[in-house]
Length: 105
Length: 105
Image (cartoon, rainbow over all chains, first blue to last red; front, side, top):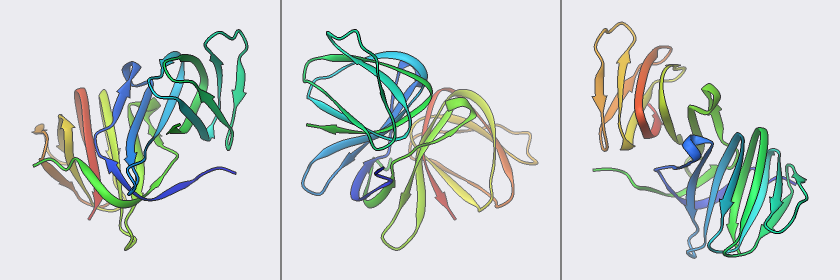
């Protein structure tokens, strides 16, 4: 099932703009201090690095991703998640748009 | 003063993507039902239409805007607001990025 809404959070009003706008996100903070972000990757093929481990949850559109050390592209669509270890990276390719929630694991 | 955070709101996780990604926003709903959005316009010159009246509040970067019926471009930077009537339109040009909160008046 797709997470359409997130309740009761603090939104940082200024967006994060990556790769000349191919990825735009807004940071969210929960009352208990948990941080997540909501964002979109537009048509592009990009490589993201992680500091903390991340779980990417698709809330619209789709992507293909390839984790570091793998040569396999895997599709991820609405309601699906994938995990990236800390201090790693992943490739992502998007044909149209990939809407996501980024959870820090 | 710039509004850096908005507390206690519901965020719609899927972004609004306009003009091929030159404008990306996320919808917010307050507990009392009030709706706003937070977004960013990237380097572009665009024309937006309004249904309801809007107040655009800059939270980062800057833009120049021109209201319908005016030939004057006006700059808007962090902490500044401008109002657009209902059923109208405005031109906006952005050199780098214009981060905003859109209030529906």
